Length: 330
Image 1 (cartoon, rainbow, N blue to C red):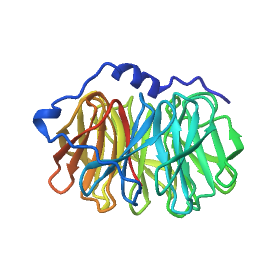
Image 2 (cartoon, rainbow, N blue to C red; image 1 turned 90 degrees about the vertical axis):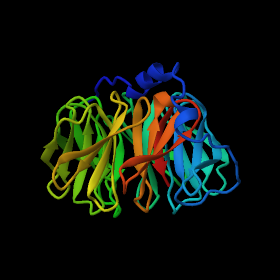
Image 3 (spheres, rainbow, N blue to C red; image 1 turned 135 degrees about the vertical axis):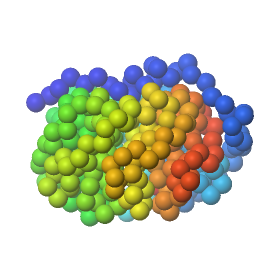
């Protein structure tokens, strides 16, 4: 069964096209751009939904070291150690950009359906899952041939997979469910009812819990991944959009898109530990592998805020180009 999808990313672009950097000169140093030819693991990838490239930040210097050329509207990146290439979902161009994993050089586009909005490589790197904010549903791309081998008529939200490659979750932004996908059968195995509008997902480090940013209900939902059922609802989380869990599993960081803040949740107590002011329209948050820093994309402020997770305070502001909609660490 197909559902009518209102593209959330399209609305975000329209909101932010006229926005400008906030406090860029007064709250942090403006960083120079030093481009290099090689990319190392552990870099921060920033997708610019209104432009045609992805910025790469080296977290050791917090400088932009590379701009990977894409087609219009890049919204997310997928990289695997098993492949010599990575992928960028070009939301506005309806395709994928393929790029060299080491150098960042773009090597070619792949037609990807209407509004590809989320991509995820399977644990072995064999297949790329492509979710759409349209009726094109969920596609499976063979990474050896770059050919689509299967299409499901459902699947509209963020994708999140376990390390073992046995289970993939996908939020459904147009219906109140989280899907459980079996990558081995390339099928939807279960539909978990959460209510509201689930936008983003994050697995705890032990992978026993999945946390869901539920935008319409102003809450974060906890799913037990062994039973695939909702076991807790953490309330009073204003307009949650992006979510990430610290490496020790103690806290979740949630972007509050209308509040211009990040809410820190104490996961042991299921309560709000702190609210951290950031720039306008924070849409995404990503954790460094070491767990000491969280990188927040503030789409309306053309900036990435770096939060020190030990102090739960903003440590740095990195000025980037227009409409940074997602941060990811690869």
